[in-house]
Length: 532
Image (cartoon, rainbow, N blue to C red; front, side, top):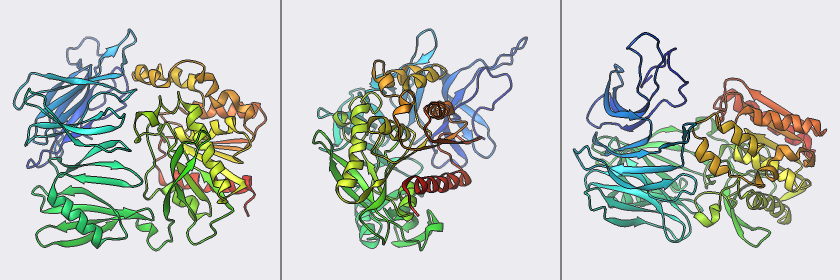
């Protein structure tokens, strides 16, 4: 265990353990990491810890010895290192209000090499996602790579000098989608490119040699069009590469750049070797107002292509999007004979601010309308049997699955929701217990959409049978959200089942639990949809 140790005297529980921000190339067993300091309450002693907030420490991973690099501060939110051991950027999110809740504005500062004074960079709003957000530092050129929304409402990446002049140069932009991140390589985290997702994830390499290698790998591995540089030796003479596709969960290789030898290391999911996996096709469909909605369609491998039992699978977030590639949930259900549609409904991230709208909660009518239109498209195209159409979602996707049954009770014949939000007002109350309440409260908003957009308050409207799963230690969405939905559905005389997993959180990261969830979901859908 790295970082500050828990004690019986600390004044509250630790919900976050830290983040490595610099792997300190050339220093064996040493890393820089953010650390959350929690004060202690000990009567009659001067030995109690009194520091609080996020700081930075250098940790020896062999001995756990730590050295203070940046003192903790109650307002500190994040730090960025230059890859050479210097912390150059700090994000501050001041606590607001008498209840000591974190706000929604991150103010970033930078400092010049070997300096201590901080210079303001700008404010980033975590709710609207507007303002500059530093991603990484290029120490060699003394510049930062920053993501910020352009005039067209789409995120772009530019370089900003950290020499006091603050000059900006646009690096990568795209006319249809957000440029969402930089590509970093090796223990120094050298910035070598930027990435965005159209129908598929794309990379723009700043390093011409890596661009050439990527093109050569594409020719050498034609069945694995998704290629990522995921690691490197200190001198970058050897590269760790992952290559995969929609029906290939991926293989890791080591490339020796001097000998040009490519060695296969291991598969990401060796248990799937030899299994027939489904291909994924990018599609678009027309929403009720004429908007074309991008989505991904997965059909059973080697089987019927029309009149199938089908599942609409909205993603979580809602500040997220689905991408082309291997998706274990969609692959499982395709293997079981279902067509699966994953819509990037309005409210999804990655397509600019106009597509994101306010967000999937405050703009739920548009988001859920797009999700339901995806089900209607499956039927109109002859892909889905209208009597065997279901919806499956996780987190916000679970919310969308339940709310779809409120908006159009006759469309889906079965609903599966994993860790769903079911009452927006209850979610706001839950967040009163968290220091993130202020920003999340603004994200959820206030007004009539709270009642209208809460499926638990309209349980009697839902006709389809409902199956839910939830981890009892879920901190993202409390298990009582699912318990409330179960109770409301029971009171309305609707068929419902809730499976609770003790000691698991929002992601159910346990092989046995996930296998149980998949088997029970498949059995439930087969019974509800009349599949033999």
